[in-house]
Image 1 (cartoon, rainbow, N blue to C red):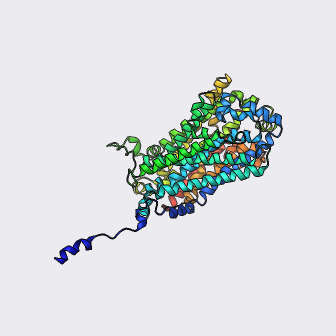
Image 2 (spheres, helix red, strand yellow):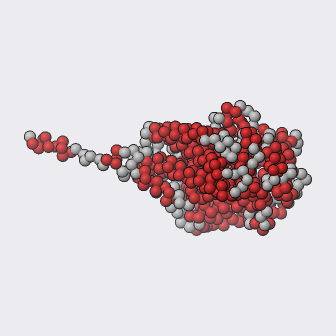
Length: 554
């Protein structure tokens, strides 16, 4: 009888530790771990964004040193197209350097800060689940909400540090019209926008089971917010701008009104989205998503039987998004092409930069400068596509494929083919959007083929960029991130270098510096042919290295 009554006591499990019942248990440890992993990535993001703003502010101080220059700059952007590219008209009541900086930079920087925040959250939440590391970590005393809470905390910390750097840096420049209070509001507007998009990512990571899908959904929200802001500021209903977190950040009006209450809207929205993310996370299993994956076809299409078809299937979402985004970006630049002479005329530094580019007028010179920006953004897609084999290899998905009759050269070559052809398609989309909108704004239909051809002239430079990524992947797989140096350097010397008067030899270090600056320059086939040969050699060298090394799963 005694043995029977003792059995339940013997079989009763031990009580779990008190921390195990806490949904946030282990958050501090995960925050430290995330900061350790991002010890290079996050500082690079924050410093790059801060330095870009500070260098732009310093350049504006040089360009608009006289009140007459500032008045011309303000009048030049007071058009629907100019306001769509910059911000609300209320900034134009003040021609101080601070209001010009906020008007021209705040909306654009809010998008970049949102990108940083989204990638940080998805990297430490959905990517951890997708690789199986989250399940392993949560087998210890780690609460269900710890991963999401730590990711949001790290993103918030990065945004706060950026806000402080901007506030201190802009105040320290000592520019006219850039005071400490306005700089604090300016920095806080960046942080507020970043917190909103970080919280949006906290929701999207619950919706889809893939990191790229979660990032894509969040980036679509950022793009939609920017479009709403542009539509409202360009002459549409002002209510559209008030539907956008970017519009809220801009309506804090740093250096003009220094309003704090629009930033409170950002904080409320961020808190609501974050709460929704936590609530949705308990409605799914670890590694799963709220939106179930679609079952595949019973039979694969003929395209999937080859490496190029498989690579295109993997890249199609990113490629389609870049093509659409670049078409819109080109169209936005093209919409102000007709006002370029009024916007830039009379600004000595800009006029000198345009004269160095050449061309028969301001429109052609300005279009040539814009082409560099479009080509560099297209290079971002090329680098992403060229480095996709590294992600497939690290995740262990390449090894089963290469264990079959599929050769390494054909497998990696499929991804490189998509990078090369896809990058050219992205360029064509940008040039087509630029040409169509430019023709509409200037009334010159001949700009459509002219600007499309000018964009496609940068294709060999994109192929060289893909070749550099291929060499790094083939021979130095753990250093593949160095491929990002090519587009970053090209932007610095190709766009900012013209304004800041970098030495001519700096252009020669970039493949984009050897491309004729169409439509201002005459077309020369020799540098394009040489760039194509260099690209072919780099791709061949990269594939040779990949054939000779072991797979690296780290």
